[in-house]
Image (cartoon, rainbow, N blue to C red; front, side):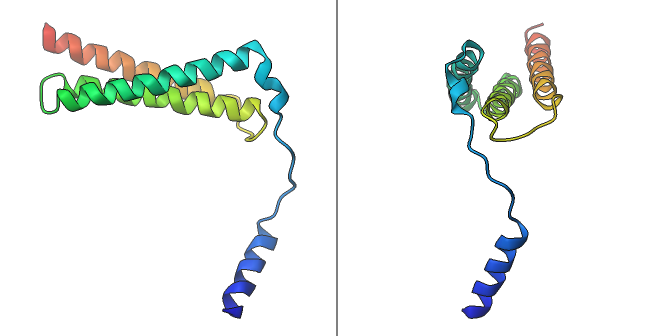
Length: 120
């Protein structure tokens, strides 16, 4: 037991960093409130797409709805990353959030292409 305690204490000492409080004062700014609203709406869209994807499982539109589900999932991830950067919880390069949003738009475009291909 002492061996594991020593290993754990050593790992904690090696992985320590400086700690700063998160900046929660920015939550009242309008862009942050909009990011929170988009996050809530996108979580709702993920839930809705999941229900529809379960209903059309194995059908022609299943791939299209799975792509929509992945696109809304990317929107959730981008909003969480954006809020983490805004609250100064996480330091990310400036191209990460736009890159995730570009991936989301690409998934939506591919889902629309698949749906159009099925209908046409």
